Picture (cartoon, rainbow, N blue to C red):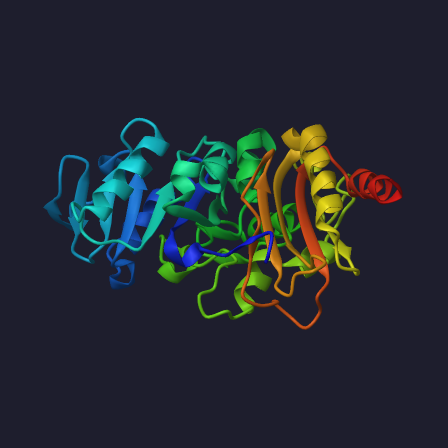
Length: 350
């Protein structure tokens, strides 16, 4: 009998976190996609209806905090604490008190640190019973993005933890500036694919299915979510000049790297090490995600964490590729690869 649960994600509602700095195009993006029929059976959580401007999409009011749009998408405002809103929505959905929805898109405020929301979704028992974190989509302003990364650590963090990066206003930005920003984002978060969006015009599918779960057991989604190869080929020394630009003082604190383990891992030893890493460096762990080959398990084990909060490990249906190597991706602030590797070496010697 396995120590771990199978991935019960099919039984939980996927939540996509849509983040990005002030003015980076989140509201324009939502305004465009909310009218798309592919958004049917989606619920979008926003702070204020008025900010999004739903008049042309509005169909009917469903309670004071919820409206049903012509596309079949439901829009709801966050009432007080996010966890209370999510619990209330799950209760109302189960009681058929809301229009039906199968996924949740959550827009953060432009100044938000995404970590507390990710922690809530990863390991709050009353939330994870009904919801699972699907992925993080971050919008970046092609015109003002470089300056925002220079001046605001929140903007750097939002970009660093993303599974997908959407670059807005590329039609307004100078070509050289836009190229420099893309190069900088590629260093900051080499694992996240970049997509250009103009006037919020984007395939809604980019907002879905960014996480590791795949009900059909296909492997490509797990590979894209982890994207270990990109981190292996990325720049681990962030203190240098590259692509013709200076790394900002905020970027220089961010590192991303992938540790690989060729032999099956002893879970007790690995878990003790990971607990120690979290205890010592938890504040510096912006995001950790991995697919592990654990001794005694035929299926891959997925782990996923932010700071000191980790989702309970779950087994996937199958391996994402032929090689059964363990791969563990770190996105860190003021923590380098050598320190983490040294801590593992010390654990192996004990």
